Length: 121
Image 1 (cartoon, rainbow, N blue to C red):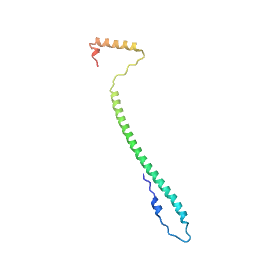
Image 2: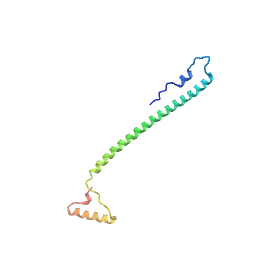
Image 3: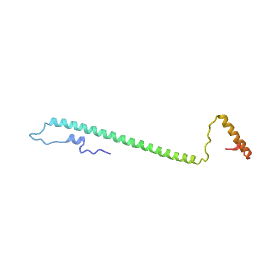
Image 4: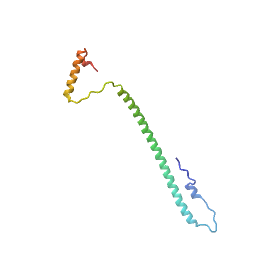
């Protein structure tokens, strides 16, 4: 959001005051106005840097939001694939020898049913 100031540094610098007999010292007024101009210029630079940084962060935020959306979509697809799995995974409490024995028993049962375990994919 741009900062709305009533005066700019140029307006302050170019402002002419009318003189009076009991007026202020012109040098003191000019010195004070020079300080105000310096503050305005610093504020203007700060606002410009801040606006640029905000734009940069908004762009980066959009990229990250796009990534999150894609990952959420990918996650939903993987969750669907996972939910299509119907059988529970067997618990393995033994070592590799126990697993080999179990596979062997399953192959024997498959042969008895008339199937060939080497052709299962």
